[in-house]
Image 1 (tube, rainbow, N blue to C red):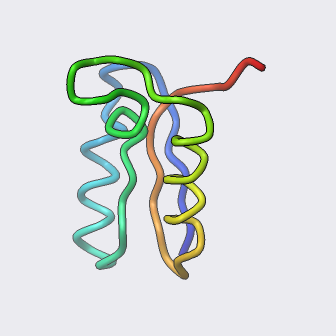
Image 2 (cartoon, rainbow, N blue to C red):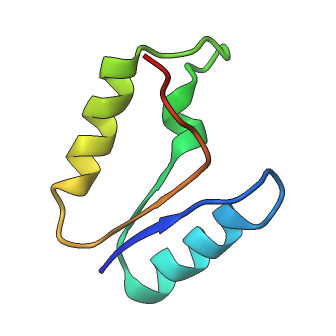
Length: 71
């Protein structure tokens, strides 16, 4: 199972992702957690792509968030 959840801020993306993750016992990647460092500094595009790619190599995953990259 591979699921991507997108939506506006406060729409319940994280809640839905967490419920599905527990129900189906699969990894969930919250894009907010990889977009920023702990001090709210933005991470590089290559760092984010590396994290997303690592999750996508798994057989089952859920990715949630609402980001787009502008080169």
